[in-house]
Amino acid sequence: MKTTLKRLALTACILVALAATATKAAAQCSSNNTAFKSGETLTYDLYFNWKFVWAKVGTASMNTTQTIYQGKPAWRSYLITRGSKKADKLFVMRDTLMAYMDMDLIPRYYVKKAFEGGTYRRNEVWYSYPNAQCAVKMRYQKNTNEPSFSSQSSKYCAYDMISMLQRARSFDATGWKKGHRINFLMADGKHCEWKSIVYRGKKKFTIENTTTTYNCLVFSFLEKEKGKEKEIVTFYITDDKNHLPVRLDLNLNFGVAKAFLTGARGLRNPQTSKVSK
Image (cartoon, rainbow, N blue to C red; front, side, top):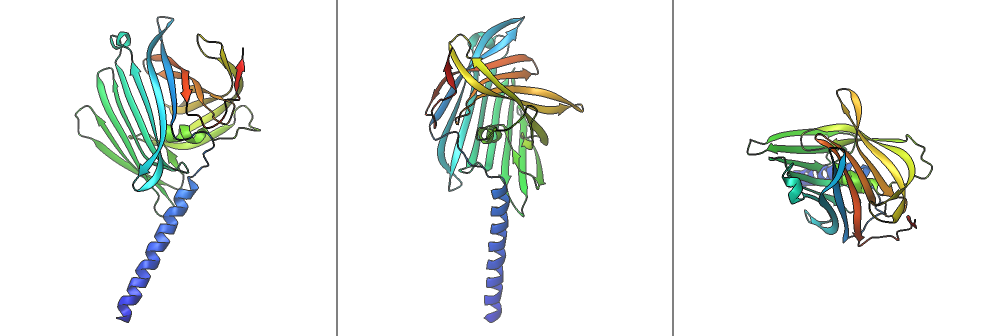
């Protein structure tokens, strides 16, 4: 009986230690959220450069709500893009991105379902935090082909497109100089690779076809292609506590696109960056 009790006690101690280690690893990836609250919804118009003319090709919306994931309170963020009927004649685009994060922005799950140009792709990422590591399990499927799986563990935190965007919105850029760089691991469902965000400084930006002007912080998202850095997205976020993405310039495989904020509701903080023209 004593031996059994000792084994039970030892097992309990091991489980507690493992739980504490996992908690410590996850805590390293946590971040305070000062930018958004449940119910925030952002809408965008999408434009594409077609034969030197900027044409509206669709819309996008991003919604964040508080929910439950695996029995715990969590954030769920959706980003949905839809091409217009006119744009469908040239290039069909139906993308849905979704991410679950703990209340302190620790990534838990990400999925991207994309139907672009007649090809369907599904990218998924599951996060766990064993033994003071960040572990990601990834799944990728194209059309009806057999899915491929991969995994990676690192002492560094990993993020996906949505969880990094939401985390970055609470960055405090006070004192940053142009060229300030943030390096991080990004998991996209196929790979987990180092990417960079670079601070480009402050600019005023007026929303397309409006008189609404914002004081903005400008950032570039970079990745390496054949050993050289390539700017994938330049994004303008409001210089206030909301840090709303109001403009995105995207360098896509099939051309250049832009997204402009057209609506924002359910905001957490006053829009102090909005100025009259």
